[in-house]
Amino acid sequence: MPLTVEDLLAMPGLGLSAVAGRGGLHRSIRWAHTSELADPSRWLSGGELLLTTGLGLKTSPSSQRAYLKRLVEAGLAGLGFGLGFGFDAVPAPILRAADRADFPVLEVPYPVPFIAITEAVSSALNKERMRELEMSEAVHDRLARLVGAGSGPADVLEEVVALAPGWSYLFDLKGGVVASAAAPGLAPPSPQVVWKQLPPGLVDGTGASTSSSVGPAGSLLAHPVDSGKRHEGIAVFGKAGRIEVSDRVVVRHAVTLLGLLLAARRAVSEVERRVTGDLLAEAAEGHVTGPQLLRRLELAGFSPGAPVSIVVMDLSRCDVADPELATSMLDEALDARSERSRAALVATRPVGLVVGAEPESIAAAALTALKASEPSLERARIAVGEPVELRDLRRSYIGATLALRAAPPSVALVTPRDLGAYSLLMANQPKPVLQSFVNSILGSILERDQQRDSDLLVSVRAFVEAGGRWEEGAQILGIHRHTLRYRINQAQELMERDLFSSEDRMEIWLACKALDLLAESK
Image (cartoon, rainbow, N blue to C red):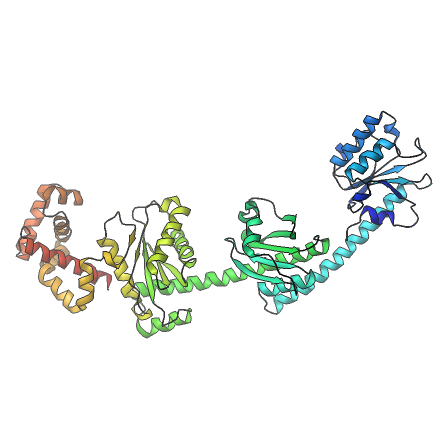
C-alpha cells in the first residue's frame, strides 16, 4: 500500500498533528522535500510532502493564501509546518485555505528535525518498494506456472481475479471478447459498455500506454496487450473500489503473459493459414483432387458436410503492387463474416474459401469492408462460385473465374447468375464433348496459330465480341482495321465458316466459351 499522510501521522516518535485539510489525509506521499522559498512549485513534480519553517511567509494574509494555492495546484501530498522558527502556530490564512482545498497541513513540533521526517518517509517508501518487489515476484511465479501448464488467456484472467478480486476482459482489436473472468458473486458490466469506455488511442496504439478511470460502477484499468511491436489486444480490469498498487502489479504481469500467449496463438494460426492456403491454391489449380483433397481439407478443420464456396477477387482494374497483401486482407475480411475461411494467391488472383449458407452476402460484406479500408481496392471485383461439397471445390473456382469474364466490368459483385453461356456449357457437357466441339469449329485456326503465331484466334474473338464491326474489333486488338480484315478472311477460309452469318458467329462464340472452360479445367 502507498504511504499516505495519515500513515505518517501514525508513526511513533515524530509527534506530528494535522491542523487543517483533514479531508485529504488519504493523499499518497511520493517523497519529502524541504524549501523556504515563497514559490517552490517550479522545483516540485507532485506527490511530495513539503517541509518549511515559514521563513518566506512573513508577509500579508493574501500572500500566504496564494502560497497554499500554489502548493495545491502543484499536486503536493501536504505541508509540514515547523514551529518555533518564526511562527508559534500555522498562520490562519493558510489553515483556512487548506481546509477549503482538503489539503493536509501538519504541525511539526520544534524538537522534531526535518531530517527525522525525511528519513521516516524514505524508510517507509523503501519498505513499500521491497514489499512490491516481493509481491511482484510472487505474482510472476504464480502466473508463469500457467505457461508451463499449457494454459490459455481465460486461465490467466481467472488467476488475475483470484489474486485481485474483481472482473477482467481480454478484447481483440475489434472489441470482440477473447476471454473473461470475474470473482465469485461479482457481476461485471457488459463487454460492450466496457469497450465503449476505452479511449481510441489505447485501442489503436497511438495514445497512452494505460488508461484508468473511476465512475459510479467502480474503478477500471486498461492495458494494451503487445508482443514485440505488434498490438494484439486490450486487457481491462475492474473492481468496485479503488484500484490498489497490488492490483496494478497483478494486471501488469498478466498483460505480459497475455502478450506471449496471443503471439503464440497468432503464430500457430498464421502457420495454419499458410498451410491451408497452399492447399486451397493446389485445389483451385487442380493439383489436388478427390479423396486426397477431401482428407486434407478435413484435417485443416473443414467439415465434409458443410457447403463451401470459392471467392475470387479481380485486381485487374486496381493499382495494387502486392497481391499477397490483398490476399491477406481478403482472408481477414472473409474470416470476420464466415463460419470458417481461408485465402490463397492463385496465380496473381486472391482466392478465398468460405463456409456458410449465404456466400453472396458474405462476399458482399467483405468487398465493402475491403474498399473502405484500402483505397487502392476501390475498383476491385469479387466473384462468388456456386456452393459445392469439398470434393467439388475446383468446380466452384472455375465457375467464379468464368463469371468474372462473362460479367460486365461495372459489376463489382459477380455471382453464378452472371455465368451466361458458360452456365450452359458447364452444366450439360462433359469435357470430351466440349473438346470435340472446340476442335470441330476452332481446330484449324488453333493449329495455324500454333504453327505460325498468327493471332487468328484472338482476332476472331475480338471481331465476334465487337458484333462483327471492324472498327471496334480493331480497337480491342490495337491494330488497323485492314489488318483485322486480312486475319478474319484467313480464319473464315480455314474454318470454312462465315463470320457475317449470325448462326456461324454464334457457334464460334460458343466454341470460344467452351475453350475458356477447358482452359480453366486443366
